[in-house]
Image 1 (cartoon, rainbow, N blue to C red):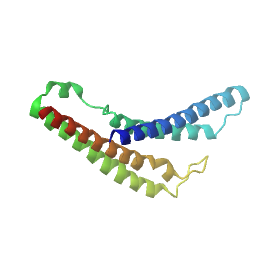
Image 2 (cartoon, one colour):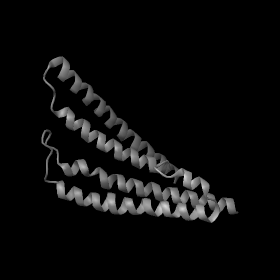
Image 3 (cartoon, rainbow, N blue to C red):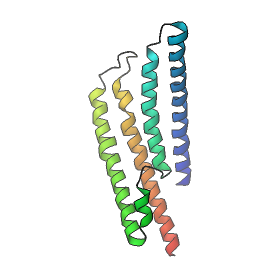
Image 4 (cartoon, helix red, strand yellow):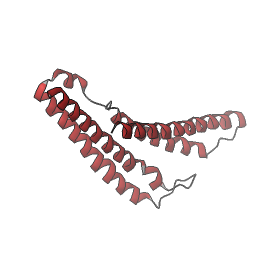
Length: 160
């Protein structure tokens, strides 16, 4: 499982890094064409926006992979024993439910509804742009399941 997690981490970080290069290059080109050439490039705005959407969603998935997602640590730190275990179980359930219903199912609905819609400048299907929702949902589910299994193994070793 650790090898699978490393592969997922590497994949997500590589794709996000490539997209970050595109985002940076698009922003620099936009500034150059606007202020030096005097004729701003129209494609760079969409490249930057679409890259940012994908970077944010891939980054969110990676955050779940490292178990560093947004949480209320001050509540979690005050709990011990069974109360902590129940809170952890609740957090895991909410994360999985959100990933399944909002990202995978809801994102799939958005993708299918926007496949025929194209971006105004580049002509890319908006379904392709929004496909990051179910994709990141699948990554979050995979990571969350791995996190739960890793925690269970750790707990069983502590009790043995």
